[in-house]
Image 1: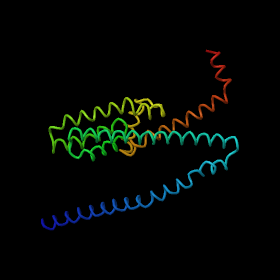
Image 2: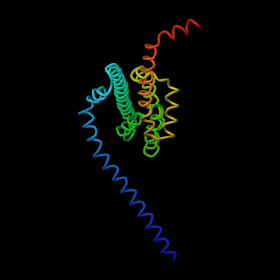
Image 3: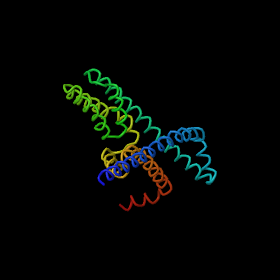
Image 4: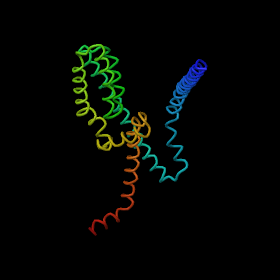
Length: 229
């Protein structure tokens, strides 16, 4: 009876793992096939989105929608290009720093640091974890120098690169970014933390655009309010 119970437990565990493996392989296959196709058609027909929407609107509103789509496109383009530049900077400088101090697997760990830096504020802590683990297991004497390299790179990035490339473009307060990251991480995990900033930037652009339109269309109400004050 005990042998039969052990065999049943093992077979059940194997069946569950096989199901998980099949599910992972299926998801990877679907993503690998569909994402390039989606990107192809988005790049091919992306310019037709604006005119297609304008056909269903009056000329006045069509112009406003086109302006709004242009602003949204510029916001996303600025964020993505700025984020790529920042990640490249962090990855290259971290790799160079690790090579200078003689850290094992310097290039790989630098690439990891650059990729994880796509998550604002929290990414550097995720990126340093593999470097600390490698230093502890392969070169303990490099541990302090790894921390020094990361601090120097993040200080340059946080005080020079990020404010000038992304901060001025999006104009989002750091406290707002931290709150968004905490909420998005709790709701949707790492994916939410990566997407929450551009999503918020787009929503902010839309709100500012409609607020500007409201101010243009209702100037007298604002003047009356100011006179009343």
